Amino acid sequence: MRTTLSLDDDVAIKLKRLSKNRSFKSVVNEALRAGLHALETANKEPEIYRTEPVRGNPRIRNLDSIADVIAGVEGDDGR
Image (cartoon, rainbow, N blue to C red):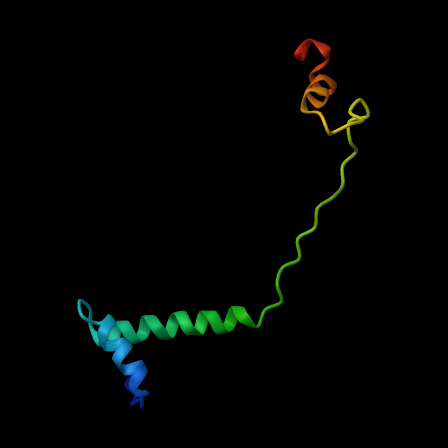
């Protein structure tokens, strides 16, 4: 689709700087796609992550000592 756009000077300068090795058209399209994607995703509510609690190991009563934790999980032979 052909259309005419009036770009602000700062935007035109940045687009021209980015289009050194590519066509101006491809840089403008890429920038518009990225901007549109950002606008579409900015309006969505963030996904809420939830974790489900799990029952702890009843043999582990104290998490202050890693040696005690390992002994509780692997048995006293793990020491």
